[in-house]
Length: 290
Length: 284
Ligand code: SF4
Ligand code: SF4
View 1: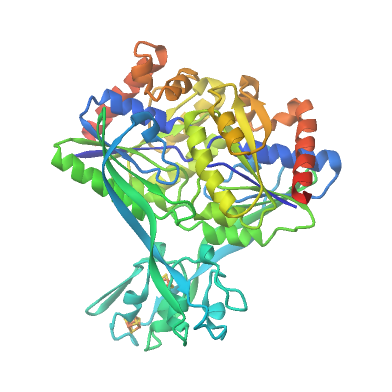
View 2: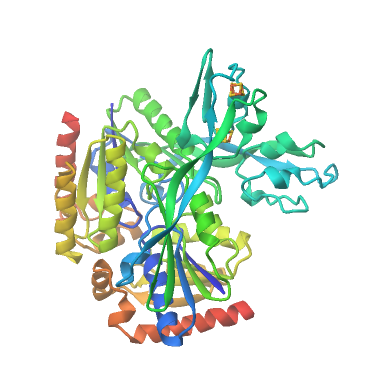
């Protein structure tokens, strides 16, 4: 079983659009995993039919019994996240769940309780099984929900004898990103030829490098700025990344999105679809050897 | 006044709006402006500030435990306590996973044998620069580090509320976003008129409403998609305070790191007007 993670450093580069195309091109042979649990969008193109929902408990959260509290101030002294003010009032949205207040409180006025941080789903789509999730607003963007999505995807692949897992990764370079690429066979970075895009690629390549994961890069909307495109490609080559074919700026992707379709379904014979097919074929070739 | 510029989804033009807004009010009104880039995973605002010289002003550290193996009796209390599974205690060994540690200090408190002390671990830096009348700050998280919130927290200590403060907020709706938006007087949500844009906008609206911060919507790349975002804003009584058209010229300027108000000065007026609208809404 192989895992391909598609990431971008930042959002809006076309990562999800391309993942959806790959799903269509894989022809039912892959399991899809949407690991962008904070702003999951893949389901808008996949219209999954949810067959199983699991609740996801992240960290615990402090609950205060204001009646039992003697306002001694120990919680205020010890909490490093400023979740208490000097009068020992608790601000739950600042609680990081460390449980230090519960430990130091001499009056048993604080209990750590389970908090539901999100939901994970197992679904069927027209392109095969899908594992996805939703992190509730304001919850810690930890890698644990991402790891759960990946575990569910692996279980699905085993049950349904699929050889490939396609992972739509989250933006950034933090914990969720690390959780979505560690152990993957290959990472495909979708870059944008802007000055900020160059910067983002440098940071995300730093991460793949740090964890020793083989990576490829594809510049999307390359014709917005061809100098920047070359700079990104040169940088990636110098870091040993495989440079894949470029994709042009094309409104087809937005039109397909509005209809809830992948570009492959929306305009199969179009230029953009053709180029994405090439990208898919080349990525697969690299996958086979990695 | 503190204005947070956020968006549920990345890549909608949040940084474009934040930088152009800060530059417009800075240059033309002579007001004291602070621009603070809280997107510490991928800080990009600095790219749009020409001739900016950034200087490191602070290391951001978190305290992490150190174990004295001579004192430890491998009781496992610290490991049982740690909510983040950062410590594993075996029969005669303690393994510590620094990337999981949140620096809460709990293990130190529970250890009965004084086997734990703390040391500082660097997780990022804060940089500062001044350009075009703007006092600029950004946080930069070290590659491979998982925790953004402590950096945002330190960064926001640099805010001077007597000035016009513009915050470039990280994408999404998870806790770094809450940390960045908290305490703002007004929150601009930047979105795109596409299904992805609408979906992520709804999530962001939910969060900011919960925080009781007034919201204004900016539709970027107006004309690229459909009218569902506008319909939603109407239904939800969310004011659309600006629309930026989907023009290749703007995308091209962005790609070269040029704030579009520089080449299209008529937009500077619009941003100043926008700033006035926000001021009125806040004074309300
Ligand atoms: S609580 Fe102290 S003595 Fe017990 S295992 Fe941890 S460091 Fe060692
Ligand atoms: S400081 Fe807190 S998070 Fe870090 S190891 Fe100790 S108990 Fe765990």
